[in-house]
Image (cartoon, rainbow, N blue to C red; front, side, top):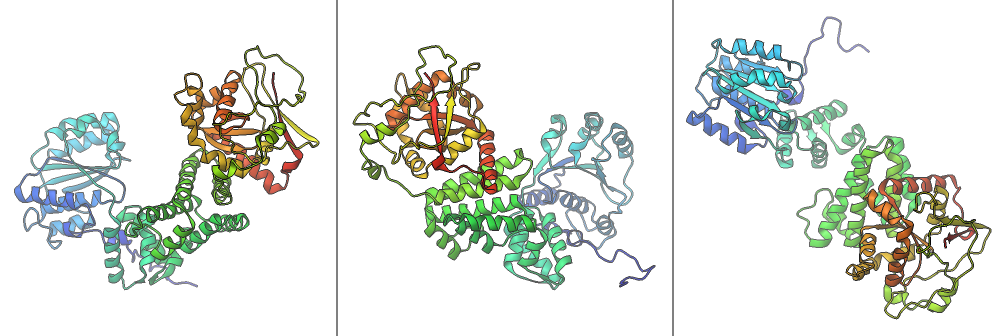
Length: 580
């Protein structure tokens, strides 16, 4: 179907951000501190010879530069912007001979700047001032900056330079010192909302507030970006602006869907969580933005849970935040926020973000899928004597030099009964006597412990949520040994770790620092580590450390095997430590 006949082509449509570019200072959205300063300077005749407008993209730097040029050259006097005189109309059209806009990204060399300097000395043609607007000035080469330096310092009286940049730190200090600097900030949500409403009403577009809020969140403080997004949505939907169209165009999920996902997480419904993730991937949902939105929602829950105030909610409505706060306590909300923050940081380090997001959702679900165990209850568990008889031995005598020996399961050794002041935190220390026995042993060359992927996965399979919960609740008790003359240093290292996997025989800790991981895995340090664990928790277990990268790797391996149905069963795995 032919809509436009041949020969009828013309630029009939003009983008919203160009159509509704502010034509006076009063129409500028936000940046009122800059508007007020410039208007006062124009009114008092305190006009600088060079200005630097710095700030994020789409916040009005170039627009403000043109408004200044218009205020300097309006026929009704300095400071006026009548938009009717010959000068104002020429500046609006971009055809004024005395207002020159230069893109430094493509004209950044010495030759271009020297050509500009040669023309500076000539007088004006139409207006009072020659205004040179140099956009993206940080793109200029050092040689071009140096060529401009002298002219910028002492330009002719009829010449004014306005430099605009998103990266002022890249500009030479000698240039910065010769300019009057104005820092543009991101436009507030309310200023963007007000401007969008004015435009929608002028365009006779029907809209709802939630759709405007979505556009504002996507714009991230940029007025130009907001109008470009609005333009795109209206091109898709026609004469209306609604939430569904915005979600469809930008691959977003609705608040109702995100709330439903959070509810599935807090109810521990892993199948529903994975089904929802699968649908997100099929629809091409923006996973990074979804992660960030979940983070903001949980922040709303935390704010409401700690203050009871709904004034500062960013995404959730009052009814929604109350319902979620009833099911998520502040501690768990904080844990979930921490996991999501780490995930957003880790997105930069992975090639595929979908598997990482999947692991993140499972970690979030695991927080709510674990029973809370109190120390007072744990102390009433089976007697110590029964536990001691079943408990495997992990301690390695480090006084003797490590000697290579065959991998043979050691004879059970009865532990000494813990002292009365020691904490007994674990319910089940039984050892499965099956066909599958995995050994954790020391290496002979590097004098440190290593665990291969197979053993790591099997430790994860045998991990127990109740043991990990008990450990986490009493992790702070390690501080009691921080001042101990012999074990204090080891206790401090343990405190810095985050328990990742805990079974009745082994514990995997995650650290941010690779150097701490190396120290934790040294054979000579294992005895002190086990002594601290036993002193504080009444338990002997092998302790192994991994860095953040290793943590993500082992979790991904675990999830891949889980999805393939190839994980070994916990009751078929027995892990033993081999050492002197």
